[in-house]
Image 1 (tube, rainbow, N blue to C red):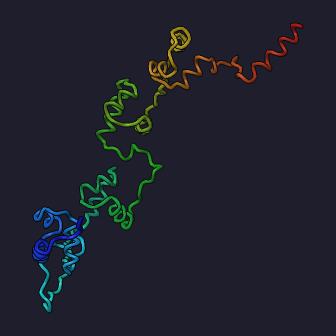
Image 2: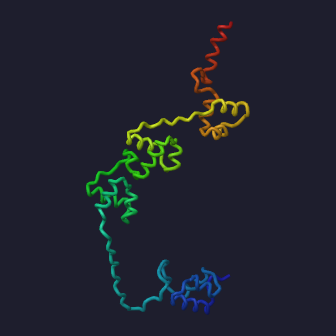
Image 3: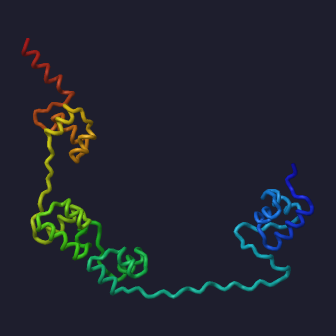
Length: 240
């Protein structure tokens, strides 16, 4: 089996390649494989073009190439520093300012820092970055007696943010405690034979918490497994 083209096909492939056709297009036109067409061009002495070049006919020998002009920089609108500063001090985030000004988040940070704007750190409360409407919605739900879960589902916030907003408003945050049915946990585990994961899913907690409850680890009278024998030995000695 030959790995190159016949003379007629080789000559035709050379003409097509020098006119700008690709090796793959020539292979499809001649009904040959890519490798055979490439080997035929090499045998014919045709210089192959580097990959990635545009498929155009080569310039004639001795032709003067026109100089390439440098791309003109596109004028960019000035950064609205006063507007960005006002937005940041009003509680907007850098990402929100970037989407409004058309600059990246990092460039907005650089502009504000160079202008002497005091930047918020990660220790600043999240409540200082939310909108006034969101803060009002949190306070309205809190005053209406809704639970944190209901406020979070409505406003899309976090428990920590609720605490901070409520504290900033001078209100006393409510301590959210959830009471689990310990008797049901023990019955499902010991009587009905449910797994820890199933009991945890039923109560909305973790399997570790269920294990602690059903084994009595939360009681003061609980003795760890490794110390049970040590506690039992004195009792046996007293009996003898």
